[in-house]
Length: 262
Image (tube, rainbow, N blue to C red; front, side):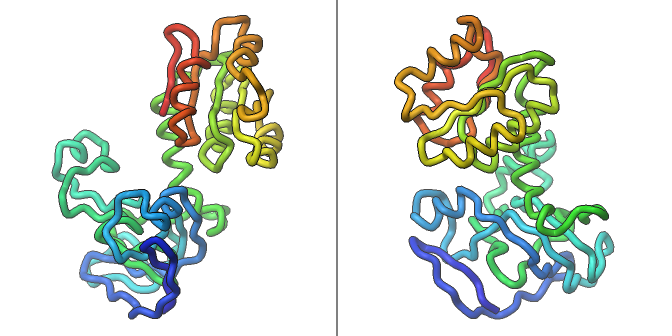
């Protein structure tokens, strides 16, 4: 089968279709998204174990199951998280499976497990979830990044009705964060980005942002936020760009005793 691999560049190669073990599921990939992590790996700027097939935001259909698998069947439409966690370490036992500390844990498209930039991939059955009726496989491929944003915004960011929220970065995660903050009752949402993000900032306005700021063209973005908040600063800032300078600027945007989510 054809796959997309790093290191430093992507190569299209033919490799054998993997065979699922007793407790594994072979999934035929229907859709796969390009995450910022994939780009960092391509440029050798992130942790990974080469050679590896990239891709961890995906959906597909079950093509084959191991003999011990009962949770899904051939033909089921499915997704999975990126991490095949151990379930035994402290982080797993306290509900933080994404932080699994097992040295042999598998992370799709990163370490010890090939990802979804391929015709097929194999994952353990316990991380596979069926896609509900009414959700397309293209939409379902966003389940992994959407889950990350739900965790960051709903679980980790205290947003009360009427709060003023700044979202830094209008990428996929930032736009999702904008929608979720809106659904939580935010009174005003300000989305910031760079000049190259203009088209994304336009999308942000359509899905819930009350104001957008180009932090490269504006001489004093902090003053704009202060003016929009009666000099108090934002109740919450969600940093979704991954840029170091944005992390520093988040502290300038937020009010005293406000909240910053990185």
